[in-house]
Image (cartoon, rainbow, N blue to C red; front, side, top):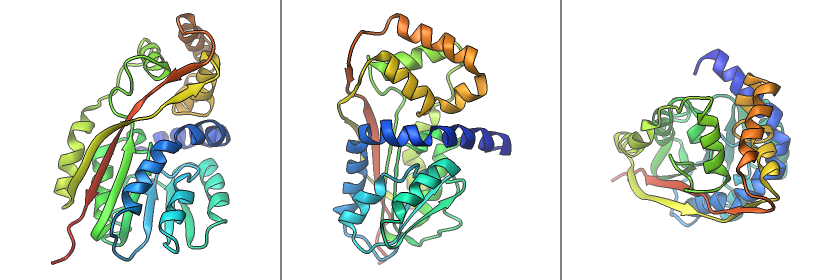
Amino acid sequence: MTDERLARTARGWDEAADGYEAYYVPRFAPWVAAAVDAVGGAALPDGPVLVPCCGTFPELDALAAVLPGRAVTGVDLSAGMVRLARGRAARHPGASVEQGDASTLGGRWPGRCAAVVSVFGLQQLPEPDAAIRSWAAALRPGGVLSVVFWPRRTEDDGPFARIAEVVRWHVPAGDDTWQDRLVPALTAAGTVVERDELAAHPMSHPDAAAFFDAHTRAGPMRPLVTARGAAFTDRLRAQFLRHSPQGEWRHRPRARHLVARRPPAS
């Protein structure tokens, strides 16, 4: 990731941090629970748990409950996210947060971690397949990786599908072939993929306007609208609302969940 892109991404999430914690953390909780359960129910070796792209660190409370006494380190690029994450970590002895690029952690944590857990960060990275290979390299023998991310299509109808359609009118779709390279990347890193599944959970929003405002001010579109400016955002909002339903908007998006284990030493 270039320095310019790093700075733009970090700035967008700095501005979004408080809103993300308030709006999206409660809505994403079922996927966080699933990611943590995959390591909490596994026999793990000694060593810390690493949480790349930790955001405000919602994984921490669940990890502390199922793996008491285990050191847990979150890593995130955004100073705003790290500020909130450190507030959460202060309540848990043994927890810490580092600010930095979570794409390349294998070189800093080579074979040291009992588990790697990440929820909704992978798809934001410039080379997700390289990142997940690096995360797998951080595992000790017997260690488990549990990663949840948004796949190519999260839903057939709903606010996520609608906002993606409207954005494509203005911004070309990115290359999503990295999703096909994730399992090969994990295999090349010496892990065995134990689960590769889609998990859907219900979500609701007060109305279409509330969703759009949250998504652009406190969600994954914040870096884009920060870069494009208010006129672009207003135009996008009008287009999004034009054909959106009235009143509460319920949907059931699906995320992809990968669980892989490094084989125990013989």
